[in-house]
Length: 339
Image (cartoon, rainbow, N blue to C red; front, side, top):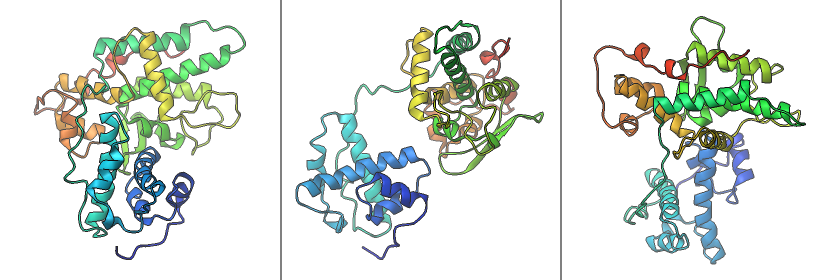
């Protein structure tokens, strides 16, 4: 393996030292530098670390000599995972890392290349909602946030939680942003005072993206800020957990996942939903409204248009721009956000 730099003393270096047993394993550090999201880094790091830990506990330290890793090592490691979906994910993570090392000539070849990928059947994928289901979901969330009567010692907290759920899910289903982009969005990223309401956030690839939002979405966020984030500073995150602690805690992706699952069940929507369902919903509704696939690709910040195409059955390109004709705002229209 060629010469490599020392472990960086930046934020990633601190993150790796805190999260990985392979603290001085520099190839892993360099591999994780590709990713901006802590969630992505954590998942890759966990899978790759598990492979090396498995063999360390068997008395074989493979980290110093990556070229010694063979297909047999990988297959024996995968045998411990019973579910095909788990094996597929573990193999994909290790293969990405080994491919990274191969490109940089740290190893001669990627030993994962010839291993047959596990067949994953009946995978529970997130589903998109139709216009009626989104309207039903939003009306339910609006009712819980503004019309439901809470009582008891936890009434204030329950009402705050309901307002947070409404604001978060309204934003996701209107803007189509990724859940990590929403969780990382800060007060200074909002431009809600001007005539053209805008949000700015860092995309999956680490690029900065600015998008226009509807007046209704801007009003929802402004009301949430006035009620829940009155003392927030410019660099504070927009959405935080509702809790008794005085120190604000950033909303997590897991928290948003629980929000949408809970809200859908309460609203009587019988579908497998996740925060990703919001992006799929926006893409599907725009496509049905005649918006060109390329426009939807740019809106959702997909590098490849094939990724966008997965969200819709077929592309129906039209020469004229249909952005303003898409009913994204109308089918999310609710009553006033306050009495």
